[in-house]
Amino acid sequence: MHANKTNRSKFSITNVATVVSVLALHGAATWSLANMEVSNIPEIEKEKPKPIEIILTEIPEEQPPEVVELNAEPEPVVEPEPEPVVEPEPEPEPVVEPEPEPAVEPEPEPVVEPEPEPVVEPEPEPVIEPEPEPVVEPEPEPVVEPEPEPIPKPETITVEESTTIIQQRQIELDKQRQIELDKQRQIELDKQRQAELDRQRQAELDRQRQAELDRQRQAELDRQRQAELDRQRQAELDRQRQAELDRQRQAELDRQRQAELDRQKAASNTPVSISAGRANASWRNKPQPEFPQRALRNARPGDKFTVTLRMEVDKQGSITNVSIASSSGNSIIDNDAVKTFKRGRFNPFMENGVAVVGIVTLPVTYEVPLR
Image 1 (cartoon, one colour):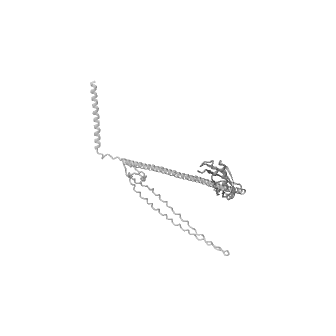
Image 2 (cartoon, rainbow, N blue to C red; image 1 turned 90 degrees about the vertical axis):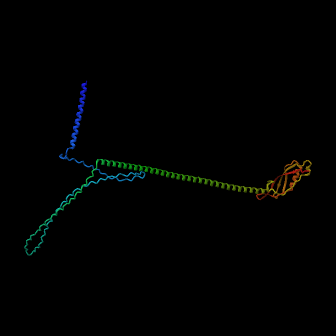
Image 3 (cartoon, rainbow, N blue to C red; image 1 turned 135 degrees about the vertical axis):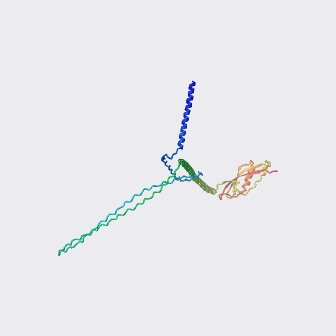
């Protein structure tokens, strides 16, 4: 058991020493490689990394909406230099060779042969054909090729800078998108407010139109009612006028009938009953009755005796007959009343301007004088 523990400790110490020695060798090799002269080592051309071309376009700055005010200044956008446009080389123009002009042969002159004499035909002169002029081909103009413009080297941007630019562009785009969204929301809100205002205005106009229609209808109803009232009033006035006219006509007819009756009565001497208190029953000579002495024997002072007389009066007002309509209970007083009033006289009784015969009923009171 003790031997196993000793072996294990030795084994662990050996392992540690081995690891340390290996690390020391690696460190020495690394230090020697770092301090070596590298002048004799051929330089290996490394392939240069291609620069990252980032084309930044300038986004037009939009006007913020009136409601939202943004005070943040936009970050400057780096504009890349435009890429050179490579113009294609112009093709040389083809040289057109002029065609040779054709030689024109002159026509022979016609010869007139006389009939009588034989004419010796002359030999035709040889026609000399002109030699064609040599065609000088124009030398083609030398095409001057434009010198290619120097291609500017693109600005090399590191990955960190490009990342920063992309982030800035993304932030700017997000800002612009947010501004656009806010603007669209504001436009939508303005549209909704305008639609609500238009709806309210239209409702107000409809209400005013309805009120105007109601007012016109009410005015028409009032006018019709007033016209009906006026018609009824006019009908009532016409009815009253007609009734008044009818009453006047009836009164006139009654008056005419009464006048005719009075005229007939006056013509026929038919007596008319007249009350003693009427205005037309006025006395011309009124009798003054006195209590008869013969009646004092059986009477006491202050006693009253009333006898009612019926008197017939002619057209001249004279009393033609007196009779007793109601006795006083004392014959002496009754007879004295008849004799006294028979001597009286009335003014003529007039009916509608005509003197008539009348009958007057008159109560007469006798009072016993005090002794």
